[in-house]
Length: 88
Ligand SMILES: [Zn+2]
Image (cartoon, rainbow, N blue to C red; front, side, top):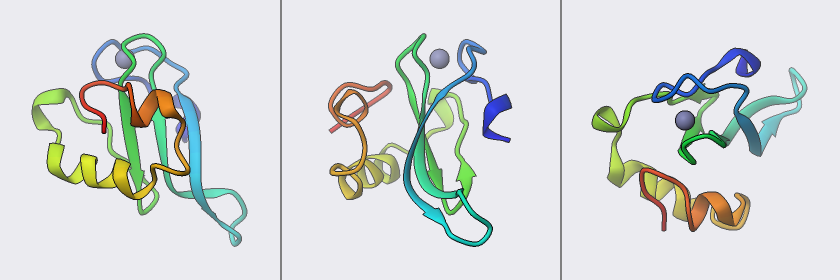
């Protein structure tokens, strides 16, 4: 499913996938992670298997900053320290 997701801001795809945690059963099901658009440099969190693909005005900044802080060790620096619309 993740293969067909496009960036809601510019429709760019495919998006880069970064896995923080994946399930063993079924295998490789992404539980927590992030999608990254190389066009506009936005990240989209995957929380509890759900990719949160929202335009900027509908995003929850507080929740996403918390998400980035929680997984700062597991996500690449281009996301935690440089992604749009916000980063750590
Ligand atoms: Zn984009």
